[in-house]
Length: 270
Image (cartoon, rainbow, N blue to C red):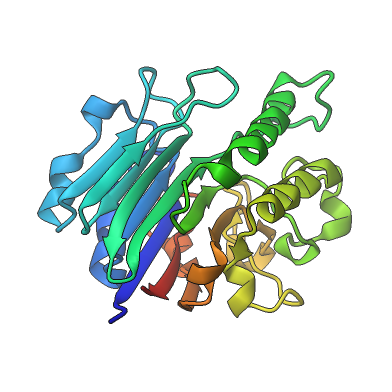
């Protein structure tokens, strides 16, 4: 008999600084699994004990040695398998995958923090942008076959807003990193290569604007509403067919000392 599974993804922008916001997410929405990005925390400093007290007994992290980037997974369900994949040979902690058991069988969840890419959308003069494009290329080569026949879900801050309604102004952002044609094409090629369904756009029509990130630079982010959809949930078609809800928790952008990203939650009957 299928049972509910809720998965939250959130670029927390420092898990130690914003640990209380994660706890607020738990208190209000109680997701089964929380995937965090940009944790900015070495593995040994991750506040696991605080989250275990909130019911997340199963925790996997990839924070590296320098305290930059970083991803982590908090789970109420036992983790059957954990994997960390290195992209571009840089040793950046930008990926972690976990497998959990459900009534319908195992499900694999890939949690990503794709490089932002800097400011100049030219790989010839901007090594950060070149890194981003290489990262997406390596994802496309590796990820579609990475789950070994297990239905998978891909979440995280993919740092690309691929569709015209994923940004506040398609025309204004065509030459801005995160919405340039080369990035949008690369991300869509990746999604299609793995056959994943964009869960957000199953519930929010492509004609409607949908954002998950708002810059700190705006004095009144709501009034300006110059957002982008950088945070994504993709699902294997068998799982996407079981998706029952999708939410962007926009109000979290008003929480005390917020991240510039807000949590996204997808719910499945599995």
